[in-house]
Image (cartoon, rainbow, N blue to C red; front, side, top):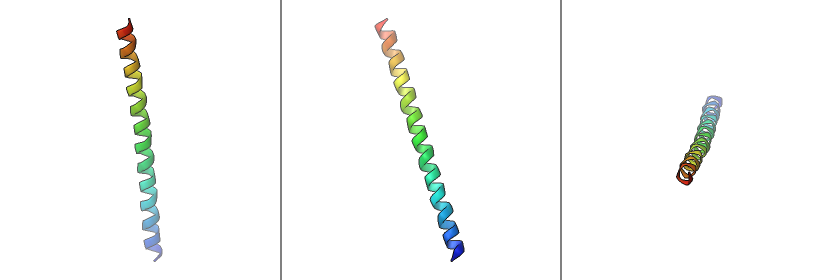
Amino acid sequence: MMLDVCIWESFRLMKAGLAMRILVFAILLLFSVSLVSCGVSDEGGA
């Protein structure tokens, strides 16, 4: 029984870690895309 709870807890933590990694990756991706689009529009303006 305890082993089952331990496995479930580790699985839950793993899922939480994965969600955090995906969230950070999405934020970085959005940030880089906005930077690139700003750079492109700046070049277009000049």
